[in-house]
Amino acid sequence: MSRLQALGARGEQLAAAFLEQRGLSVVARNVRSSLGELDIVARDGDEMVFVEVKTRIGGDDVAPDVAVTSAKLERLGQLAERYVARSPDPHSPWRVDVVAIVISSDGSVRTIEHLEGAFH
Image (tube, rainbow, N blue to C red; front, side, top):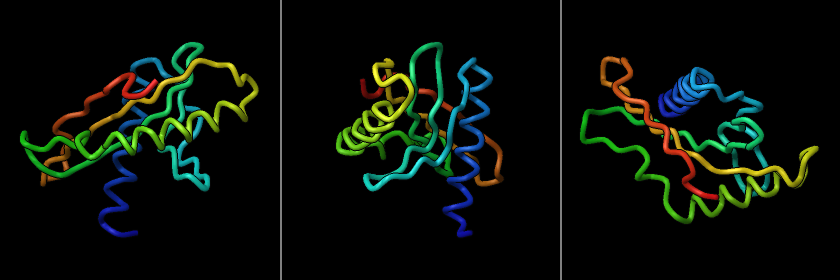
């Protein structure tokens, strides 16, 4: 596993734990399709939540969520629609969230930010 892949995997693990601490239930991770990948699929009450995780190494000037462009959000929306359409409840409400994580150069977690409703 490359250093970048290891960072991404650690970020997804941190994000899943962070979301569960806030009452969401993680349903699936790394769901792949021909359109791309959903990092985390969770439930927040009756709402499906599709989470894009962005992890970067740095300081206060690092903003991982900036890497989530409008084109990326559009693709995540398409992935979410496909996932919900194939679920037991195809009319379930859903949203796309972003979890942005910054890790210090020493490996400690600087910040975890949960941006709800980045795409509906």
